[in-house]
Length: 616
Image 1 (spheres, helix red, strand yellow):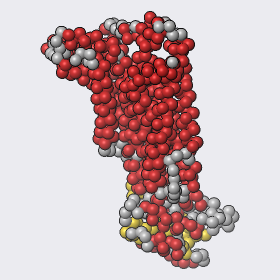
Image 2 (image 1 turned 90 degrees about the vertical axis):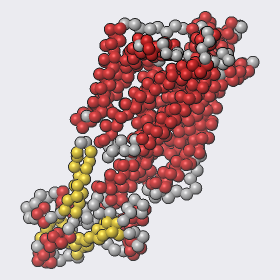
Image 3 (image 1 turned 45 degrees about the horizontal axis):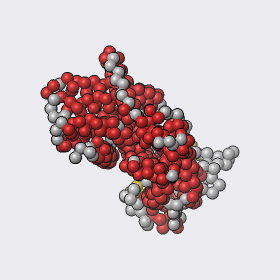
Image 4 (image 1 turned 90 degrees about the horizontal axis):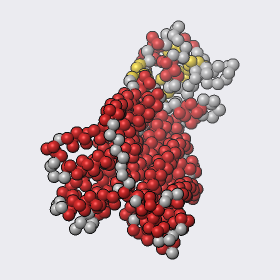
């Protein structure tokens, strides 16, 4: 009997549970994908372990964020579902059901929804993992064959995390229900909304809200001076400011419209404004949370998609695309696969430091060589909190006797040889000829199509440094100190953040939109008498539908508008990380708003089905 009642309850609220179900399914699918990518050892068997280790750390960070937002979502969603079912549970009690039986009923309903969404979510997660991992593998150049998205440890971790959440939610629902008396359960949808009418405080609150938001936006834009304090200041001021704005400023706008008689008495505007006045008072906290989550979700997608600009910017860090220290058969073979634009050269002589017997010796170059070689390097500097690069030449003036040891020019010249930590000394051609050591020669290449032919260029650079790695204490530095290594490192970070930001944003969107949907639908039953009354006095159905669309549209639009403003100002902070955080901003904004619009249309349809179903 208990199972029958439970299944009947699920069926009667199928549309409401479907909203919760969709959000939980997407959250568990993305959680599984993040876990599978962050913990799967198959990736570490590839040729580029460091690249994927960085991606793993990135997805690990995403797991933490997703866990926090999922926790908040489940708390909100379950409280709304419980409020919608309280009347049914009250009726069961009147008919003689014991509190313990009702407690078990709500416990079972919560677990059934959770388990079903988890199972389907993990199946979707396996497909997502397969697709996303293949994209990452191709972008990072990993050599992994026959990778499968099904990974048992990730599945178990996902199962454990969501099982704990659902179990705790079920216990909380049971506790809350058992502690509520029958009268409160039966009249759950008739609770009055308390309006706070202190106009002076509302005015102060509105001014404070706008002032706090302005302070937060100022902090985001002044990240150079404030550094990490800009995040702290921005977080607290924007959170508190958002609450004050929803609690006072938007309500004040509704009151102003209500005073405009031409607008108020047009069609059903008076009724719609009255509904909104009560809604905004009752929805202050949730709309504040939704606007913040909207900003986080949209910001995650926008920043993630713009991280490719960081990889492109890393190409400016090195002037020469490939540095060849010595021609070997492997180098000659790989060189044939690369389209060379220009070749420069550097002749030098290296004298080993006999005391330390490492690469910290002395590199001799002739004055004529420096004059004729026309060597260049990229000088880094900061402008507006961002790293910029400027191409400079290595001249004889910078290397003349008495020049500073280990100056930037000397370091840059040493990095064009296998002896990265050696000092550089410029001498005359006669002195250079008198040095009785074998002359070294470095070839400096600039190539065509660096990005499109990156894998072949990387193979060539790795072959060029290979003969000098054995027994070299600076081998790691030699491997990482070239253009291909820098691009590989940054592109792996960018790829990780790009995928993480996109899928985190989708998960946030699904949960925030369905949470707002829950809040709107939870009040639908109490709105039925109002719409029925309007129908009886002759109000046309199209006017009722228009009023519903406007009312729900405002509730969806307000947090979206404030969230978009938060993102536009918040992206100022990312100027320290991204070359142009506003680049192609219309793409993430378009995707996000289109999906948000779909949730709005679904909410309108479900709400109409509840409040207008008996009026036809």
